[in-house]
Image 1 (cartoon, rainbow, N blue to C red):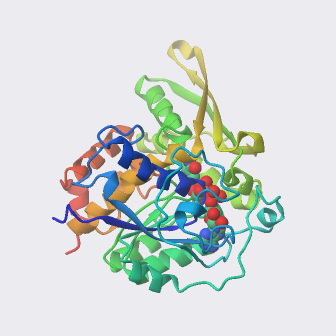
Image 2: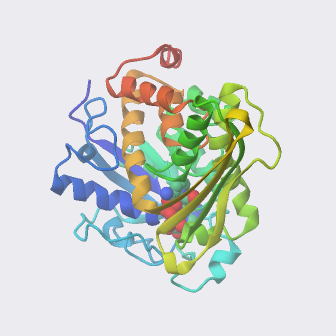
Length: 377
Ligand SMILES: NC(=O)c1ccc[n+]([C@@H]2O[C@H](COP(=O)([O-])OP(=O)(O)OC[C@H]3O[C@@H](n4cnc5c(N)ncnc54)[C@H](O)[C@@H]3O)[C@@H](O)[C@H]2O)c1
């Protein structure tokens, strides 16, 4: 067991989520790692936050490409809070493959709210990954990057690197893609991360609570607003479809697991608008309408306000370590428990308690029956 090794990660997209993650590595190195608000286990399979090392980064924006990641994370249009000013310089951001990562709409946005594309030549991503020695490639591309995600997922396979798909392009939950990772002997986690205490997990547990208490759920609404580039990018309706589907999957799954029908128009979950003033503050509004004993109506309204990118960093720190442990244990394909725990659209949706149990087992390097079936022969 190589507990003293570092976990080497490469990243696609040096945007707000990566900014929070990279600052967090240093913040917790300085503040101690035994109690990290936002992560469940200080130790997963012998690995701690400080064992994670960033070895390569790809972006296409000229304000980031060619700069050390420690500088690039604070470049416009990023607007995540700076909570750790002093961070290591880290590797230089390399020019990736643009494909459909940047929409015309985002190119037309003002400098500080949109994306720009560098004229630099794309690097050979597979070669860079191999040379960096990366264990895991994290995908933080903008929503709607179907071709670009497929390109980088294939690069991970070709370079022999595990994949952590934080965005709503379906890779871990697509059996064809999962098979490619199995054939390459690699694990992956996806798709579309669910933040630590974000709208998805609130929707999930409210839906579970209603069912566990014998209620009928007539309507479940989750409206999200925010002011970062993720929300701006999703103003293009055609790029938004997979995100809405992924968000609704979280709620729908709790009906499906219990064999409860989802009546038409009984749920709505999705990004609803972009308000630049909010920057990285995301606000979610929930309205739930239940029926209880004697058909008595029960309604619930919740407002959740978070720093979007910081809220996502903890689950990524966990997911990175689950992937590393899985690699060491020879587990291949999409990790069911960690995907259900950290992502909105996993290959197999689970109840909250079941996903947590699976993660706890893997954190102790124990293989549950389901995971044993995924161990490479
Ligand atoms: N809480 C959260 O913030 C959260 C939760 C779930 C999912 N996500 C998803 O995570 C992803 C990243 O979010 P973010 O807030 O960091 O987004 P962001 O807009 O801040 O960053 C995206 C980055 O990708 C870069 N990029 C675009 N095309 C590229 C290409 N082809 N190759 C390399 N880089 C490219 C952009 O220049 C930008 O730096 C989004 O898809 C978002 O929906 C975020």
